[in-house]
Image (tube, one colour):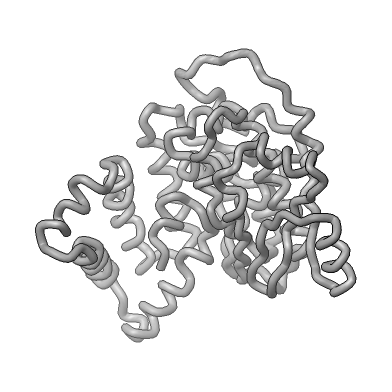
Length: 309
């Protein structure tokens, strides 16, 4: 169980909870309760503190080395993870996302509804201190980019499960298909905003999802599959850095390494030709859309606009 995936809404519900839930059921012969999950978190706290060489240093880890908002977000999430004993993966995730939106500081308005609701709630968790800017710019996305994020971020990776129909597009709730994608380091990509326009970062994220879907076409038979998309190589790069590589003659690729993961890679044209000759499966990331996004006039930081899609 990767707690960070849950707290930052980095992964779909299936990738976060399914193995954890199955382990609990297997070990307890289906007689699991919330206290069994609570015991796991006692272990989590003591294990993290005990990773330091002395008891005093272990205490210091929580007091001085964990930013208070980060520690609070982990502690606040415990009661929701405990619900996996009585609820399914997507129900737990949906309740957690609504809580994070409602309790966000600064306030971002009522819990959203409509096709973009799940995407917006996940982006709020992923972007952390940049959440207000990211959510404001979400409205400036092209229809293609926003539709991509709305659908792909609402896929659950669980058989027979979907988010509530008033929170996600019909494509993700009426016909349950997969695989669902875990964009590994997606939160870091949004948190390392720097001087970049948030809408451009969102557009790059949408393009990553599009390329992943080309490599893994949606299918009902794959509804329970979760695929990891590793973006390690670009997580700390600015949009300028990404475009500079293109101007230098290189291309950005999403390369399928196996049936469960793909990696963003920078490639020269020579390397690209070798990959084609070897039959390597990949998609070229198209960043031409970034030119469509021009700086918008400054907007108030008091809120993020209407809550509905």
